[in-house]
Amino acid sequence: MSEKFDELVKFLFEMAFVTLVIYLAIALLNNIILGIIIFGRGSSENEVGDNPDGQESSQTIGNDTIGYVTVPQDWKEFVTINTSAFMYTDPTETYVIALDSTEKPDKTIGEIAEQSAKNMTNDGFKEVAVNKDKLAEIEAYRIDAFSISENKWVMNWVFIADDNLVHIVSFETPNYDTEYASIPQTFRLKNEQ
Image (cartoon, rainbow, N blue to C red; front, side, top):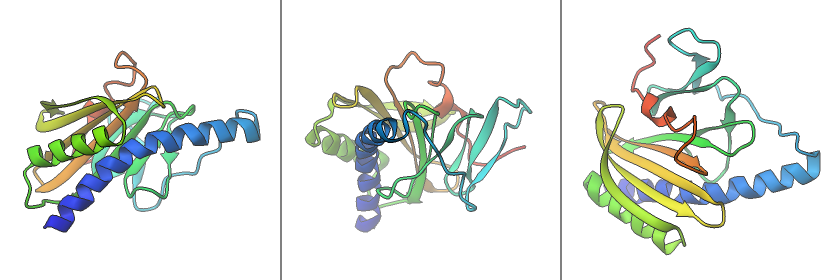
């Protein structure tokens, strides 16, 4: 089970690294294709569909293993080789939501959150904090950290859901006061359409 703990900590650490990758990708794409960003469509193992409430301005993304969230219709899948997480981003790659899950390790969720915070601090993140929180009415630990190089907040919620898997929902944003701040709170285990 130590291997599963190491995988979970590695994922949380990689989410911090993804912020740097996104920044570099934006700069490269802006220089190469004059600000036109091209995205791929979702993979076959993940579902993308209309929002359950029927609004055409949003879409539901995810699958039964990692859970689901609702994002704006113009968000696209963000693929990186550094993580197994399912990630979506806005057209400007400013905001990123990521979903992942793994088997429950021998460590507690609190221990996982504290180890993640320690790794982020060691990697140069500032204002790293771990707090108990709720994500869509599920008890969770939330790890917040600020990337000075990206000028972004990285917020990770870690929790065990009813499926007995450890879930990670990560959100990257330049500020807390954004119209997209509620996206993580749309998390659910099943796509109830």
